[in-house]
Length: 178
Ligand code: HEM
Image 1 (cartoon, rainbow, N blue to C red):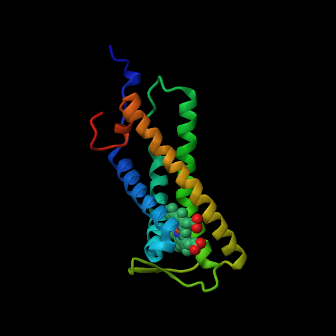
Image 2: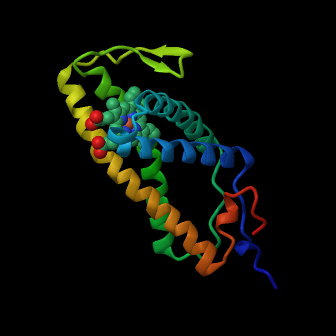
Image 3: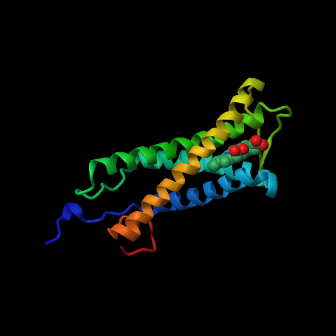
């Protein structure tokens, strides 16, 4: 007999939409950020980054009003703690990365508005050179942390899908049955 507490519960459609949209934008921005010397694309990077900030604010509001589906009852304590820590650190970075980028360009030598896909101009923050320098250092450091956590998060999802085959990925994947 199936223990109902162990049934795999899924995230809502809205939560999935937020997750996959922001995931795609963050991956694009990590790639442009790390490769910009070779491939350029900084205007796109800044516009995508500001989009991540707006979407993350909306997502956090949504998340605080809607509980995540509980993990299956048999999930070990270490795995609950690791998932919790990774998810909330990723939320923190989805806010901190755009903010430190914005801080960096605002406190740079020539602060000027950032174009959001040519549709709007986002003004620089009212900060000085020291804050800009801090933003630059933090943006680089947190960028590596974010890359490491995204890889860890993907590896954990693949472990559930390929090794454990326990339907965990289907909680967040609209196209998977289980
Ligand atoms: C999801 C949001 C963002 C992510 C994941 C991200 C990621 C990165 C990464 C990984 C780098 C390379 C850092 C390094 O040199 O090692 C970078 C560079 C940069 N980012 Fe972002 N970024 C985001 C948002 C923004 C925003 C909103 C702005 C500005 C409005 C911005 C401006 C810049 C600039 C100017 C650089 C080049 C720094 C340099 O030349 O050393 N970023 N970003």
